[in-house]
Image 1: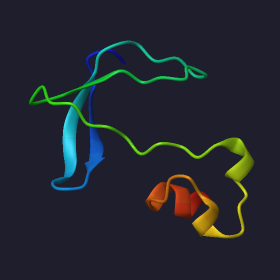
Image 2: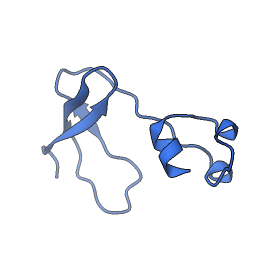
Image 3: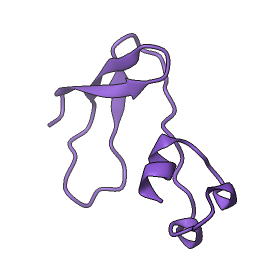
Length: 71
């Protein structure tokens, strides 16, 4: 997979091209990417496990589309 180009979501441009900079194996906790233009993009943070089944979305530490869809 190293060197493969992938699309990642972006708030301003909707999708951006990135390149996988290290091989990824199933079970790895991190995927290393480099954006095509060399800039850095932070991905949405995951809520703590204790909040993963929260019935009230206001209780989430991080409220964004992935967190709402997961809950």
